[in-house]
Structure formats: C-alpha cells, structure tokens
Amino acid sequence: MIDPHAPAPPGTPPPWRGPAPLPVRPGTGRFLVLVCVFVCAACGLVYELELVALASYLMGDSVTQASVVLSVMVFAMGVGSLAAKRLRGRAAAGFGAVEAALALTGGCSAMSLYAVFAWTGDWGGLWADGPRCLLVAFSLAIGLFIGAEVPLLMELIQRIRRQDAGGAVADLFAADYVGALVGGLAFPFLLLPLFGQLTGVLLTGAVNVTAGGALVLGLFRRDLGRRARWLLIAANLAVLGVLASAALLADDFERAARQAVYGDDVRVARQSGGQEVVLAGGTAGRPLDLFLDGRLRVAGRDERRYHEALVHPAMAGPHARVLVLGGGDGLAVREVLRHRGVRRVDVVDADPDLVRLARGDPALARLNGHAYADPRVHVTVGDAFGLLRRCPRAAYDVVIADLPDPRSTASTKFYSEEFYGLARRALAPGGRLAVHAGPVLTRRRDFWTVEATVRAAGLRTAPYRVGCRGARRGPDAVRGPGDWGFVLAAVDRPALRLDPGEPPPRTLTRAALAADRRSAERTRVHGARVSTLVHPRY
Image (cartoon, rainbow, N blue to C red):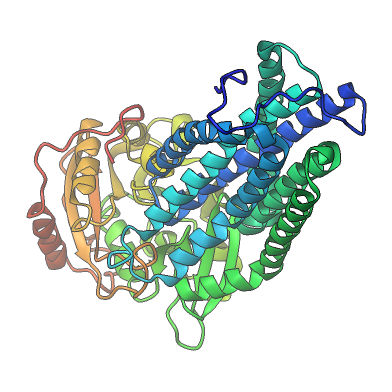
C-alpha cells in the first residue's frame, strides 16, 4: 500500500493543494468517488477471471493458468502502485488516463488471445510460447493499471476533504472489496451466460472507461486544463469506439476464428454446461467431428475404433447392468447395446445440451445408432462423482468411464483414488471397470499414473493402447491424439479379451488386443505415484 503522505520524487508537484472546487457537496463527492472505486474494482476482477477462464479453455490445466495470471497480476499491481507516485500531483488526469488504458487493454484481451489461438496454427512450432507470452503480457499490463488506481483514488478522495489515512484506506478498500465481490459473481452468472467471453469483457471495458471518465470529467474537471480535458475526452471516445466496433464485429470474428480452428464445415457451436460444444462435418460424406472446449473429443474417422476399444473388452463377462460415466454423445452406449443380455444402461453426463444433441442432431444421432431411443437407456444429468457416492453397492456389472483426459483440472477428480474406490464399490462380483486414460505416447506419465491409481483402489489392471489411423490437422488443442490409452480393471485379474458369444467389433480382434497390451507395457513408467483428491499428480 502506498503511503499518501510519502514525500514525492524530485520534480513532482506537491500532491496536497487544498480542497478541490467541486460542482457538488463534499459528502456527495466522496460518495461518487467510492461508487467509481466499486465499479472499477468489479471491472478489474472481471478482467482477471476472463483471462483465467480463456487461458484454461485454450491451453488446459486451469490451476497453472490461474496461478500464472493471478501471480503476475498481483506483482504488477505492486509495481503499478509504485509507479503511480509520479502521477499523484496530477491525480485526476492520471486516473482518467489509467482507466482509459485499462479499459482498452482489458476489453480487448479476450479477442486478442482467441485470435492468436485461431490463426497461429500449430503451437508446437514457432508460436509454442506465443499464447503464454501474450497471457503474461496482458496480466502484467492489467495488473499495472489496477495497481495504479488506489494511490490515485486516495489522492482524489483526500482532495475532496482531508482526513486521516486510515479512514480513507478503510473507505476505499470497503468499496473495492464489495466491487470485487459483485464482479466475481457477475462474470459466471451474468456476463458469460448472456454475452459470452468476447462481448462480455468488451462490455466491461465500456463500463470501466465510462465510470473513470465520468468521475474525472464530471467531478474533478476543474483540476484539468483545457487541453487535458479535450485529450481525455478524445481518448475516452476513442476507447469506446474501439470497444463498440469490436462488439459489433464479435460474431463475425468468432465465426471466422471458429472456421480457422475447426474448418469451414462447422454446423453447431454453442456454450453448454460450462463448455463449448462444436459439431463439424457429418454431411455430404464428410466425417463428423465433435469438439468439447476446443479439444477433439470424437473424430468421425476413428471414433468407432476408440469406442470399441473402450467398451468391448469390459463387456466380455456379465453385463446385464451397465453404467456409462460421461459419454453424453451416445457413442459408447451404442457399443454397449450391441451386446445381448444388456437389461439396463445408466448414462451420467454433466451437460444436458450434449445429450440433447446426441438425440436430436441427425448426423450425431445416426452415428450413435439412435442409442437414446432404446428404452433400456436411462440418462441422468449430473456429476459422475456425486452419483457414485450415492450408488448402492454391487449395483453394476460394468462401469465405463468415458471422461475427458486428466490434463484438465476439472477432470482430475475423476482420475483419483477416491473416485476409483467408489467405482469399485459399485461393481458387482465379477464386474469390470473400463477407463479412458488419455494418450500414452505424448503423456506417458499421466497414463501410468492413472493405472497406478486404479491399482491403489484395490483393483487389478490390464492396460492397453490403441493407435489412431489419422489425426486432424490444426492446433494441438484441436488435433486428434496419436493414440488412446485404456485401463481395464477388476477385483480379480481381468482377461483382456472379447466375448465370443457376441457380434464381433468391426475394428478390434483378440490378437490386436494382445498386441495393444504389449505396446502399452513397452511404455511403462515405473514408480508412478498415486493421484488423490488432495494431491493430484497429473
């Protein structure tokens, strides 16, 4: 915290020049300053949350991205507070300039990051560190401007009526913290659902520059010279113009960026259940691709290979009662229903819109064989972890975990010892658990951490990997993996085989499964540590 009574550097005009000539009473002036503090604090927190959310979406690993954004921003706030010392003699003009710069930087941050993601191609090449450097740059700049606010606002509120520093700090911080609360709640519950990330943060920038400009030009205009007033008016109008133009072009920009990422055959794109769902292709002979949060989840060319490898080895045994965790697209359910003797399939997915797409989108429903029309299939929208906690003992013969890779922090709990312990409790005697454990060759340690964690839950395992026949071109986040890793588990040692009494899979043979297991064993990482809820290892 900057001491408002600290000596100014040489050459700086003295900060205290007596009470400011205000167009309102001092009490009203103080109230307006505190309202501005409230609004600016809310906008600042929205910028922070937007950077964290967008970086997690584009780069994965939300804990790392949040740590980078928040730590860099807090450091920059300290630097900004120190730098604001030189502006205290011209606090009104300095605060107006800081708010205009903050609104422009924060408001344009989401569009800039998304543009880099969409148009720089393969991040493993020249631009491997580009998005992270841009993220750090925005965090640094926004933090600098936010840090400069408090010393300048302290000077402005003291210009209205001199009071002890402790009282002024208490008033400012109370308004600041309440504003941060409102901004933190408005971001997930108002801005994202109604406006989306791009338009929401542009709107925040417009509110920010309007509040800062109104305070300075309305309440402290007599502290500004004529030239300074016109410069500030021009800067604020320019920032508002840029933000308004960007908001008008946001839909076109998003469509162009989406085409750059996913190709020109995107049919469905929507925010649903806290994630972005995109369907591309599926018509005119083009394979259907399903993307969740920018990552290729289902590739039309290889999806059958993936789902047969996940489901069929687990179904080689009793399979009257089956639980599918995730898999809202219905493709794993399609493979389950190919087995005679299935009496009930329970599907648990957190995203109701994905399930609706799987039922209603013609291409996706055709691909999943209209699985949700089968009366044996029952869907529950909710959290897989919570369902397993409520699940009776020995309720299922087969549990299939068709969940996102553990690289996402939101998915890490589904790859924990506690989760697999609940799944083990839900298995009937002789039951089997099938786990999608992510790619093996590119994230070898993660795969073997999953296998070690399943064993730690009291299950014996049979790990195997299946190679992809082709990968989609594009950024790493949307390109298909080179292979898939799976873990088949049971209380007794599971036999990696196919049920000879059932229709054979189209892409999988018993000999291929044996080779897939040997291929996985050759990548084994010895000493992989167990992942738990409080100590994730991914």
